[in-house]
Length: 304
Figure 1 (spheres, rainbow, N blue to C red):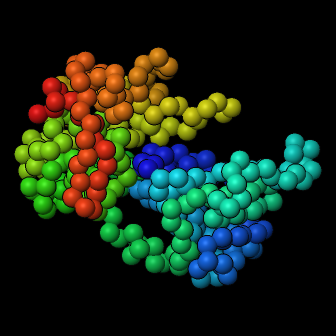
Figure 2: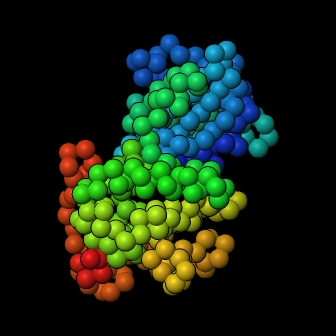
Figure 3: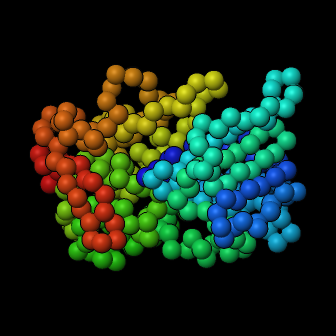
């Protein structure tokens, strides 16, 4: 399932194509949305919220198309004109039966394939619809120190509301803090040397763990340079720093060299190679309580 950084990069990719553009045609291939027609509306904004993508249009009542990729979903962009300005027919890279939403502007066609969730609702209702989410780790508000303190405190408050819950479960609960997924859950806990099974109340620096997870995600939101593929996701670009949470400072893309031969993760998916930190075996198991369950990777030697 895509994590919050994937949605930030997706919004960055769609924004130049859609934002400020008039929709010439819309086609919602979901039965309950079959009569929705956004043609003639302009796209006001394209923005992520945790693992959701929000496309706001200036329809008469103000509408937002809200989508969630789930496991298989994707949004793709196709050109409708060639370099000479002549019309071309887009050739989709996926079967037509997988399309759930088609949006057309004068120059582009944007298609949502196999979207796990697709809704169109009044923009005024979006805050209530997503009100269950905890603080979004990639919310731009984190860039303001005062707001960052408030968001961090709220995330910690929600995590501690059930102090005996296993830490590995709490981190995936989007009601507590949102945007983080399984990869960053596993990697942040490895870097903090925390056993995912220990109770939340036993964590020595919960605010620091929230910051560490956020820093790992933020470091992977850089857009692709023009004409080049997007940088691969990685959590291994870190350096020791006694002043940083858990003694680990995450390097931003502008400060880290691109080493294609460096493994991208410390423990996630490394059940065959072993822990990148100590070389010990990586344990794989399920951790769930009926509401949240993902395959867990952790190192018994590093994490206590």
